[in-house]
Structures are given as C-alpha cells and as structure tokens.
Amino acid sequence: MLFEAQIHDIKDFLPWVRLRKEKQAVRSLIEQKRRIYPAEQVQADSEAIMSQIEHMQWFRDAQTVMIYYPIHNEVDLRPLLKRYEGQKTFLLPVTHRKSIEPRKYDGEDMMRRGKYKVPEPQTSEWKGKIDLILVPGVVFDPLCNRIGRGGGFYDRFLKKHRRVHQVGVAFDFQVKQHEIPHGAFDHPLDRVVTPTQTIGL
Image (tube, rainbow, N blue to C red; front, top):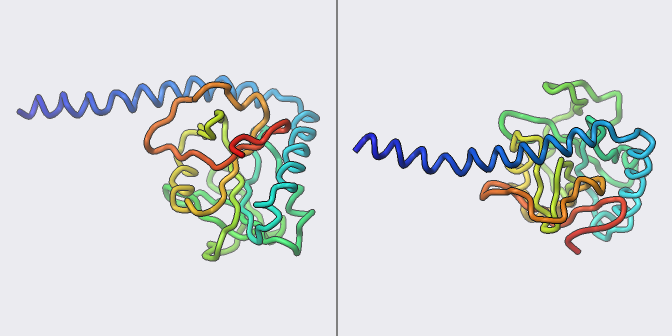
C-alpha cells in the first residue's frame, strides 16, 4: 500500500515537473533576447508603453500605483515616478519571505540594494489601498497569462489583490501569439501593454 501511495504521489508530481520545464524553455529563449535588446530600443519602447498607460483610465483614476525597479533590460517605468511626483503615490515591491511586500517610494535617497541586488525602498510596508499594479514578466500571451522569473512571488501577491487592476508590461517580442504553458497556481492579468497594443481590452 505504501508503494502504491508513493507511485500515486509521483504521478501527481510529474505534470508539475513537465509544466516547469516547458515554462523554463520559453523563459530562457525570451530572456536571452531581452538581455541583448539594444538600450536605445528599450528606452523608446518603454516610452511608448508609458504613453499607453498614461492614456489608460485605470491609471488616470489611480491614486496609488505599484510599479517595479527594472533589471536585465526590462521595460523601464521609472520616468513615471518623476512625472507624477506629488500627484500619485507610487509603491515598489520588496521580496519578503515567499511573497512581495509593497513599500512606498520616497525618492532615490531612500533606496538600497536588497537581497537580489535590486534597489528597494527603505520605508515600512504599505498597508493602504492599491489602485493599479503594473507587472513585469518574461513572457505573456493573448489571454494575459504570464511567465515570470520563476520564483512565484508575483503570482502569490497578485492573488491576494484580485480586486486591484493588474496590467502587465512587455516588449512586443515578449508576447506569444499562442497560449503559453500555465497551471492552476499561475495568475492571469487583466491587461498586457506593449509598445504597439493593449491586450485584454
């Protein structure tokens, strides 16, 4: 009976292993392409994405917006911090235990490199309302599914904030035209914005 139970556990585990491998294959290919994306194109595409976001009613109405600090050639939304200084409250994520802790951005002087060498606010955890979350990722699809860096931090955080508008941002080559591998623990977004389109309208 014990042996049969172990075999059953292994069968349950195998689909998860297969899914993880499928995700990693897609993730590796796109991450390589993003890391060699020309700096001037990153800047131009980031500006185009921010322009679409600024025209989005969700952003216009939002008082508190969560963004992120870009690494490895991710879409750079940091100019929004300056443009809307004093008009909106911005939050940045801090990886804490197995999830994300949102903290208020109070200027570059209050930023320090954290556990993963990503600059993090040295403010306390934000306990107030969040109106909009702008989400990074590695790969997206037309159904707004997302493959991240593999830690599951954002999936856990976003599930806790289902009622908050959640918008992914990506370069065009990061959006596949077909459905990407995803499982029950993955969290689809409301929209995905690229330099040329908004998916999920």
